[in-house]
Every structure is written in structure tokens, then in C-alpha cells.
Length: 263
Length: 263
Image (cartoon, rainbow over all chains, first blue to last red; front, side, top):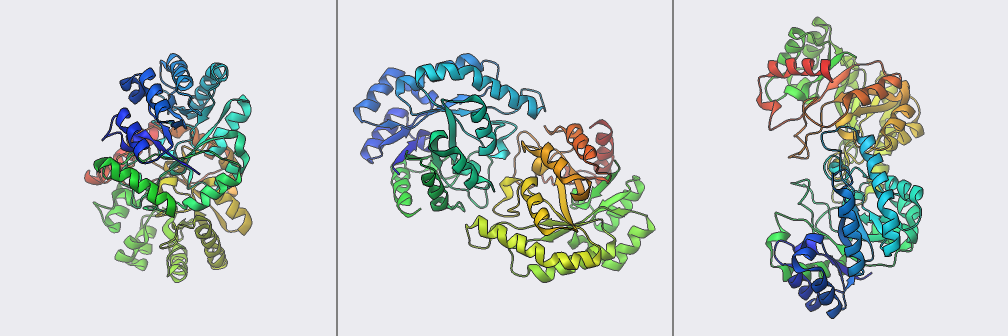
């Protein structure tokens, strides 16, 4: 499985042009940029730099937040951008509770309806939508879809053109992980994100670990992913306010590559 | 549903004798003590104070940690103590990953085997065992049983004398919560713990909120619990390094009672 760099991993140190250049220098052949970085560099400039370095865009981060007010227009723009970038999928972080609400069931309905509403546009643009279930500790604020099972239930209801982004950080604990990865299969597995779960974890958002520094059995989960037929990249996505965001980004990329050989 | 006080809620301010006295003064009729507090006060002294104030012991916290080395003797002692205290159940926090291991599947097997091993003793002592699924963010360090579904699967395999402690803090996010509470039913629902999920949550362990200060729809979950036939106490358990552990404990108890009238 080839390595892709989710640009959040070095976003504190480098802008997108520098990250693209870094990928080229480190022979990393995949990239998954964030929309704010693409906007800062300019969409056409980003497309041209990606083409120049022949980088595969394994995903665009991110659409979603269907519980926010302006969700529809913003998601349609995200689909257009993903299409322009030739992204393999648009990653959906679906949003948490509706503002001011404690109604998790209604919030989840809204998310499903929101995805259903943009899915025809995504199909037309040839952009697969990848629901990313986030860790249950993010249910209130970021994503009220919290397990692969729940995401796949939605996929089954909505049909073609939709699948999941499986990020080990969010799903490693799930007793049904192997079963649900098998259920997803090649058709629904649109992206595979890696990092590690640190013990202790000091922050709910930005204390992810480098592969090998935590407790996730990455070879095992990878074997399930490959067994399910996934043949894409493995994308490193590390939010690390306390550690990796403070380091020399060239060291970060070198370490990602080294660790992948051992995990 | 009557109020029970999990003694962790004021453990930083009061010792167990003071907590028992506080419950009596505030007309709180249920209590769930922790074993270290019972040990500090003395088991027979605790029994006599509880009897003197006619307090119902809704649970003893805690047995478990089956992935630790001395798990068996310690759990047998916990069963004896729960029996002496007349506790309605012994709460099991089952333990996380085996020391030094990333093998979540094996750790979970060990937990199941451990529970199976002590269950005959618990039955003999008339002490129901209550598996408490902990939030997935605790999977590595405290409990590798993380959903009601997973806990109930174990209960179904082990038979009589075992059920679950349903703590809203750990399970509120679960898309299958209503379904699994119904599945548990009166027979398996041995304890119901409440507090709230704060937004933002600043710490993975000890930043729980007072009922009403967070985003958990407590009346809804309570309706599911009551609908499933649970007729026990609702037990307030708040770990709050940053807030409630710093307050006057009489204010904490008064607030618990007030909030229960409104949530």
C-alpha cells in the first residue's frame, strides 16, 4: 500500500505549495489536501502543481457539517473542487449536534438528508463521497456518525457513489471493526487513514500519535482492509499540537516513511 | 427514580463517613461507595453507618481490571465486600489492553474469561456483577468493553447473575443505545449512572458535567431505561477535577437534587 500525506500532518509548518514540494522530494506519491489550504494557494495553481509532480489526490478534506446553516452551498463547492483536483473522494466530516440541540437522533437524520441531497451532484461530478465516522468523543462537536456500522447503514440506504473513509484513530476500539470492514468491501472503502492512539491521550482533538508510538495494531487492521479488497493508498493524518506540529516537517515525512516500513 | 450518590462525586472533599452523613442530611437514600473509601473507613464500620442511616447500596465500585496480574484475588475480595455491604451489584470496570500489548481481541477474551471465572463466586454470594461499558476513549487504559451491545453479548454467553451498569457518560453517543437498552431489559439493567457530557471536554477522565450542563438528553435516555423495566435508583457519578471537586460538597449534593428535578 502506497503512502499518501494528509496535509494536516504538517499544516502548522508548511503551506500547501511547500507540502506538495515536500511530497515530491520525499517520493510520497499521494496527497490529501484541506480546502482552506487549496483556497489559499488557489485551485488552478494547486491543480497545476499536483499535475507537475504527478501526485495522486487520495481525498479532499473536507465536506460535511450538515448540521451547520450554510451546509448545502458549501458542500456543492467542495464537490466542484474535488472534481477539479481529481480527488479519489470527498471526505465528509458530517457535523455534530444541531446548534443548541441535544437531539442526537434528529441531528443524525439531518446528516442523512444532507448527504442524500448532495449525492446526485457528487455522482454527476464523478466524486465519490466518503463518510468518515469520527470517534465517539467527537459526537457532540464534529460528527454524529461514530461507527463504521452506522456509516454503512447510511450508505446502504443511499446507494451508489458513497462509501466510507476508515481512519484507525476513530475506529480502532470498535468490537465490530473487522466485521464492518468486511461488510464495506472494496466498493465502500474509499480511503484508509492511519496514525496512532497515544497512552495517555492529553487532548481530544490534537494529540494523535505517529504510527508505532501508540497502541493501535496497525498491521492487523491493515490486513483486514486489504482482505476486504481495498487497493488504494494509506493516508497519514496526524493532528499533533504537542509534538509533530512542532518538528521539522522534513523529519515528520521521513519518520512517516520509516514507520510505515515497520508497522 | 430515586437518587443515589456515587461517592466519587465528592471524594476530593469528604471521606466516606462524611459522605454517608451528607447523604442522610440531604435525604439522599442511595449510595454507591468505592472500595478504597470502604477500606479506609473499615468494612464493618461502613456497614454499621449505612444501616444506621438506612441507605440503599446501589453498587460497589469496583471490581474488574481483569487484564491486571492480581485480578482474581482482588475480585473475590470485592465480591465479599459487596456481599457484606448488601450492594445491589458489583460494578466491573474490566480493564484495558493487556500490559504491553496491542492485542485488543485477546484482551477482550481475557476479560470474558476473567468474568466467567469469578461469576460462580458472585452467584454464591448473591452479588450480581454489572459490566460497565466505558467510553471508547478509555479502551486502551481502563476498559476494553465499550458498548452495551458488546457487554450484553458477554452477558448472554455467561447466563445468570450478570448484567450491565449503564452510565450515560459512556454510552450517550451510541446509535444503538435505545435498541440495546431494550435488549438488556429489567433483568440485565443493574445500575443506571448519570452526569453530563461537557462541550468542550477538557480531559478524558475527570471533566464530567453536572446534569443539565452538557449535551446529553437525560430525559430521553431515562425514558428508555424506565421503558425497559428498570426500577432502581439513578446514581450520580461526576469526576470533575476542574469544577465540582473544588466546590463545597453540600452545594454539590443540593445541585444534584435540584438538577434531577429539571432533567
